[in-house]
Length: 232
Image 1 (cartoon, rainbow, N blue to C red):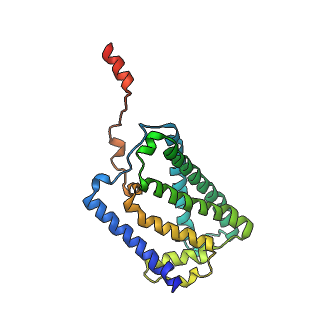
Image 2 (cartoon, rainbow, N blue to C red):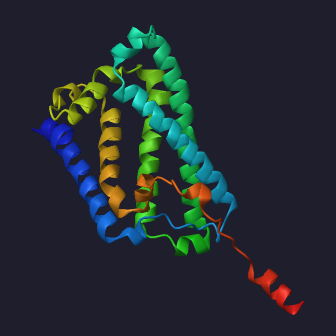
Image 3 (spheres, one colour):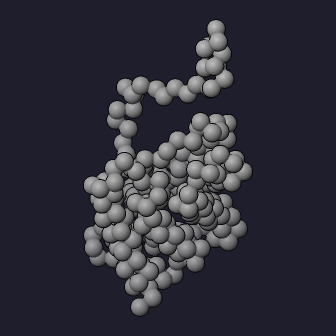
C-alpha cells in the first residue's frame, strides 16, 4: 500500500493540485500571476544569482527530459552506449546542478541579508526557494557523489518507465520498489514542488513572454538625481 500511495496516488494528487490551482489562479487572480521584481532594492546579487540559477535550471530541465522521458532504447538505437551516456550525464548534470544550487544560495542569502529585500519577501518566497534548493542539492549529490562513489544507478530502467507510465494512466509503481532512497526522496519533493507552484511566485514559469521583446523597458531614477535636476 505504501508503494501505491507514493508512486500512484501522490503523483496524481500533486499534479491535480497544480493543474486546478493554476486554472483557478489564472481565472480569478491574474494580477498575482507574476514574480515582482526587487531589482530596485538590490541589483548585484540579483543579477548574478538569477542568471546562474535560470541557466542552470534550463540545463537541468533538458537533462531530465533526456534521462527520464527519452527511453534507453533510443540511445542504443543511435549507438550511444550506457557508459557514454552516463559520462555526459554526470558531467552535464553535475554542472547544471551546481549552477542551480549556487544561484539559489545567492538569492536566498540576498533575501535574508538585505533588509529591504527581506521586507518584501513572504513565506511563499522562502518556501519556494528553500524547496527548490533542497531538491537541487539532492539531485546534485545523486549525480556527482552517488553515481561516482556508490554506483552509477541506471534510472532509465526504473524511474524513466515509471514516470512515463503516469501519462498513460497505467502507473508501473512496482518499478520504484528497488530505487535507492535518495532518488525516491528527490522525486517526492519534486512532486511536492509541483503542487506548491500555484501558491507561490513560481507560477510565473508558465508565462511565455511573447510580448517581452516589444515591451517598453522599465526605468528607475534615483531621488537624488531628480532633485538635482529640479534645482538646475
